[in-house]
Length: 161
Image (cartoon, rainbow, N blue to C red):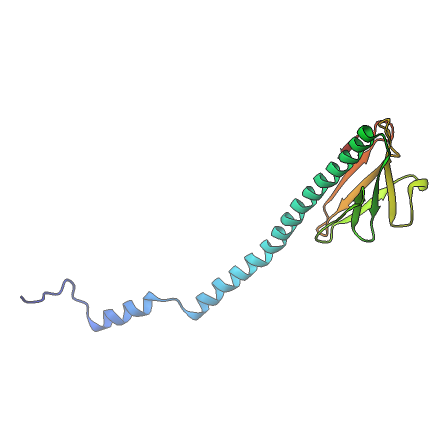
């Protein structure tokens, strides 16, 4: 059996095809520069999205802790306290302390009589359903904020828009 070539390409044609098959160094550097630019623009947005989800999760957990303290006062017949420590980035309910992650900052706005120091405050729930009232604000390093208000008359916890 004799071999018959399927295509006949001259040596000059082979050299031209080999030269056109790859990318030049300049083309590769341009593509790498574009990828680095795209990553540089996208990375902060991804970080803020993760921080935003952390902030939402921590706000829900704080809201649940406040609701548990209110329910505990109503059912147990004894006042329940929530201690907010802005300097430590934590709050405590019934002896259980919860530290906030990732640089999330907590601040409480309460009547002066409920402030223990410049960074510590207490919100108290009473057996009749009322409370000392106040507002708690959570802030993330990315600039996001969320707030919860505790109504002094009813003790209800409500998100602040």
